[in-house]
Amino acid sequence: MSNNLGSNIRCFRKNKGFTQEELAGMLGVTPQAVSRWESEAGLPDVSMIVPIAQTLGITTDALLGYQQQSQDERITKKIFEKMSELEDVSDPGKGELAVVEYLAEEVAKNPMNYDVVLKYVQRAAGLSYYIDMQNLLSDEPKRAQAILEDAIRKGINIIRYCNETVKINKAHHALAWIYIHMKDYDNAREHVNVLPSLRGHCIREDLNLSLTFFEKGYEAMKDSAVELGTLLFDLIASQIEKLTTFYCYFGSLAEALEICDWSESVINAYVSKPEYSTENHKWVLRKLNFSKMSAYVRAGENEKAKETRDKYLREIRGNKVFSEEELKSVEKEFNEGIYIL
Image (cartoon, rainbow, N blue to C red):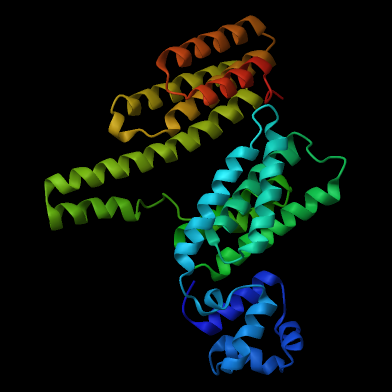
């Protein structure tokens, strides 16, 4: 939160959904006065600070931009801990809905905590998959629509008022997914097209590698190379997850097996240099093996599906990369085939 009173009034008003006219009416001032405050052409009288804060449902410290960051960090940590308690491995769609509805309540209390608001939008994007592909809330379409539309509004607020590029890009990414699952492809494309592209290779991390070398030397550059490697691995893991899902659920069995074998070789190449891989490797291998199992089921080769499942579960029990809780969740997922279309 900035220390600019005018921009703080504007941001809190927007997050409350008030127009300048509505806020002016509640405070007994003219809309022009509110407009002057927000543009910082003029500031409210000191006697108005408490009424403004009360009307916007915030503290005067928050309105003035004091000590908000450390308070936000404490709140964020508590909220994220609660989220993990609400997740339901036995019914992922139901768990996602519970998380989204909980986050919606917290966003209402903390409208300027962009970490929480962004997490809400991202989890709503995840929920949109279950609404679209798993028929979650099919008996309550208005409820589903209201959730997604609210997440879109909150995502747009991040894009308009947050000053952190990473959060803005993540909001665009989440909104694109929501629009995709709402079948609104034109709006989805608008959010996709403003995101950074690999085309041209003009990315910050690539040039920063050279900058670090010339400024600080070879040893410092090696540290930057590791950071770049892990970022690239996470990007590749994300793409592999999507590729294997699409090929295994919608392509031929031959196509699916070919893409899975290639993807596994790419992942293993990264894992052979541990400092370049991340925690994502175990999760993308989980999704890859589940997709392969799904491809066999779709092709009517249930014995092959069972072999794939059993081999993978033996491997993860032996290598102990998952915690006990995670292992139980993965085993349940594979044994019940909860994502197989």
